[in-house]
Image 1 (cartoon, protein in one colour):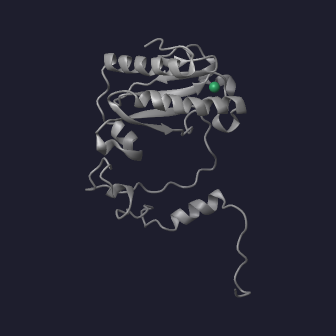
Image 2 (cartoon, rainbow, N blue to C red; image 1 turned 90 degrees about the vertical axis):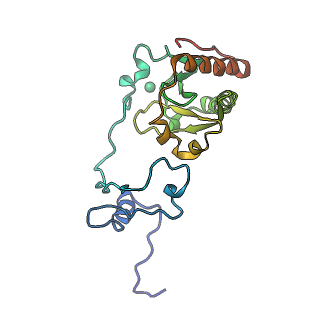
Image 3 (spheres, protein in one colour; image 1 turned 135 degrees about the horizontal axis):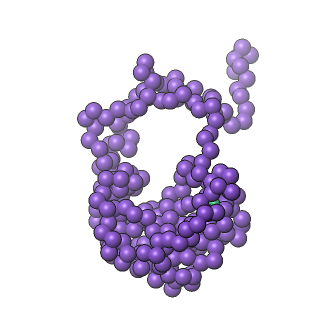
Length: 218
Ligand SMILES: [Zn+2]
């Protein structure tokens, strides 16, 4: 190494440096190059045709992260009325499994009753969450119209921990993988009676596996 070269920086990269590296690759309009080869858009699961598709201009680095709903626990939905009322596929003294409306055979959201995010979840609840992730997955995958249940945690909108379970329809192969949520945005909503019957199936499966209470408020 030449003695004229700056010493390599040590430690993890800053937010500014990360964003600056992205900006270095943008064109005059601020767009990142649109790559097709070996990118998600080349997969047969990608939902959109490429004609006219382009990247949005990259926004400047934000000055700070915005507050999420419930960042102050006193204002979180968990402190409001109706938080635990459902519709629920299953619940116990510590957890709620909510039934979401959507077009997939089953869309569920697992939340602790107490106010925690994932990074501050106490060890006993984290251990139980692991058991529940496996049990909810098994319950959803036992639905006849489902082949695989996908698990997601984003947490960018709400500070109260919420895990999503998206049931991928059996034999609808274009809905495999991480573009499932993009497809799901455009699917016709599940009829109420189908959502109710599927949630009842999942709830009964869970009660048999881990105890707790079955569906309510469907
Ligand atoms: Zn909360």
